[in-house]
Amino acid sequence: MEYQYIPLVFVVGFIAGVINTLAGGGSLLTLPVLMFLGLPSSLANGTNRVAIWIQCVAAVVRFRKGGVSHWTLCLWLSLPACLGSVIGALAAVDLPDRLFKTLFAIIMLVVVAFIVWNPKPKGSSSVSMTLARKISLGAAFFLIGLYGGIFQAGAGYFLIAAFVFLAGLNLIETAAAKSLIVAIYTTFALGVFIWKGEVDWFPALILSLGNGLGGWIGGSLALDRGEVWIRWALIVTVIAMSMKLLGVIPSF
Image 1 (spheres, rainbow, N blue to C red):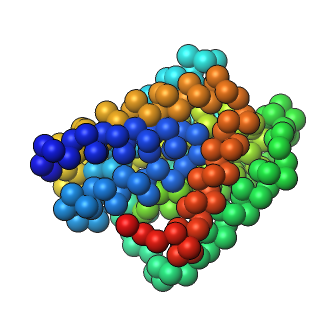
Image 2 (tube, rainbow, N blue to C red):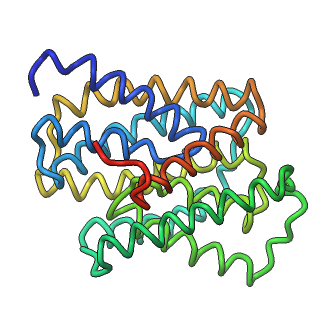
């Protein structure tokens, strides 16, 4: 990476860090930039994981300082998520790209529709963790980890849906839990990319500085502004990402 691109990588990383912490989809900004710099897709994917990990750690620390954390729940759910992430990082998918993007866009729009329809998600205390619910959560987080291990971009939306509708967390709790889960399973997925030599450490460092700062600021915004702020950030990013995947918004 040439030195004149350092500000671009840092700024894009910062924006992506804020977006990822409040909602998701920030990797759809960082991955194209890394590939624009000349990194092959696999190398860009691995390099991006370093920044994602730093961002999530920064967000987790910020949420914990603000008194928001669900360590027991997240550590349990991280087991199937980590298993899925390792398998995903080692495997390729057979689903045609166009079909995947269309289905993904539809799923995200359904998620945001539920969030709009239910503006005040119930807190975790109102959800009974029955055996069936635990099994559903375990299966969901394995699949999310599998997806995150392969693509990462957009995994946050699926985590939000699982935490809100299966675990019963509110959106602030969800933002904190999402950051912790992604930090844990990304550790294992990143290990695979490092093992395969698919990390370019110089842009990874610059991107990580931006993502880390964005993760901290995103956590502060969530704690200071509350659920309404997160909900609107989520609605805007989901709709924009869906329109891009459906081809309404052209790629750059």
